[in-house]
Length: 326
Ligand code: SF4
Picture 1: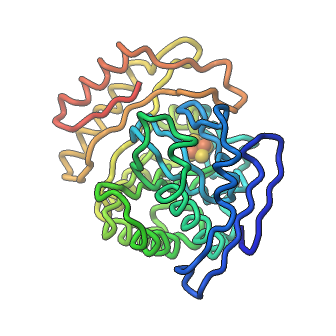
Picture 2: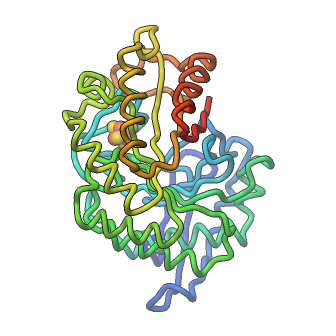
């Protein structure tokens, strides 16, 4: 929709989307001529669900709505990696055709237009009624989370500024969050740090991936050689710039939960962070909810709720908040 017209014609009812805009220079006075087609094309099979996190759910390049288990409502996703490229390869990753690499150059005009158009439709249009189940009809967050690592984008700081500017033009819930879901590996970059400062000013938060604190565990789960000192340092930088949560995915690999060596190392690491007064907001503990699209798919199973609760309790004894999503 970059945009005088975008027409996507695909095989389902929701897929014919044509958005037309007449924008002023700042994209404030725009006219969404065809967003109603989103609604006209909606049908029961297009109702969003927790199981469907397709980046293509609105037929746009960068903006996609999902129902988030963790957020408990609508999460407006911003996919900065339409090329499906990431610098890691997590074995539970759900990105289709995941490639090694970085985000492409982002078309900022198109991103802004998509975000404005989608918010317009979500807030003033019929999207909620047509496509969102009643219990999830609340906008919880705007999440930089896509088909790869969002901080690999060169324009990171400008994108945060852009989102902040667009947010101001819509009556969004006061508690709406801007969330960055990241593997944290590029937070040493100056442009990323500038963006994180902007995020903090916008009331944002970082969800920093921490699946394992052992070298072997990170290699096995995330396929990264990033060492623990680098992760620690990046975490320290992140937490000093913007409220930061750790997000930890647990699951059974070849039928077994993470062993005691792993969980003990994890607890020691969190304790060390707390002793160093690194201001972590808490831990988001979750398990795989949708099938992985990696070759290891058959080796992974959802973690048992009881195991997760026991691990969460153990982390909680350190005096840190733990939110578990089963
Ligand atoms: S960091 Fe995220 S996008 Fe990258 S491989 Fe892991 S789960 Fe996939």
